Length: 113
Length: 112
Image (cartoon, rainbow over the protein chains, first blue to last red):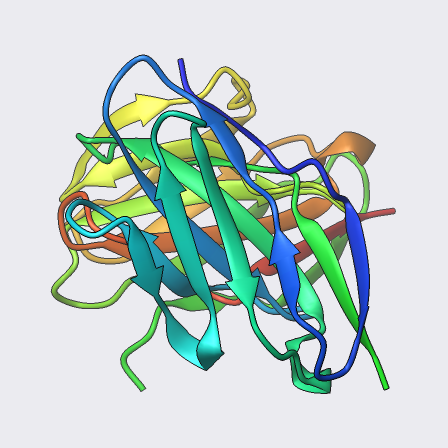
């Protein structure tokens, strides 16, 4: 079975500071990994995905994530955040078949002016 | 816009009533998923279709819940005899095969 752990439920950070949102997963099979962002009263938008190949994945809005198989992690980073990055961020994992996505409980990022 | 569309956006109903939600996926996507999201939680998988076939259902999907995708295009999720605990955001997503899922904006259900 797969599961996703997002250790930080809330992350406050000052504008233009760097941020890292942590994601760890557990799985007995190869997986695909995703980060989604959710703004209030909206659905989830895909930020980036890891399917195979380079372990450093670049996404939209200046975000990137690094897949670390030995640590079963897929942390999300941004070197300089903006006010508009304030939102809920979800890490998700799916086995290679992609039949079912497992989401973490989310990290609420608040960017402070 | 060719994104995933969900209707209605909000639904308020009395306990015990039946409700039905609709999802129109991205047209070329053969997979369609339903999720439930409660406050402060990530989406929880309910069920998924490949074309018109419902291939997987979660234990969360009680007998009061039923989903259909009759022609392999739009899907409906019906909840019968609603209960307070059914209050949540119901999200629909679609994907081409096992690729990234594209989400709609959800239907927020409130049970009075």
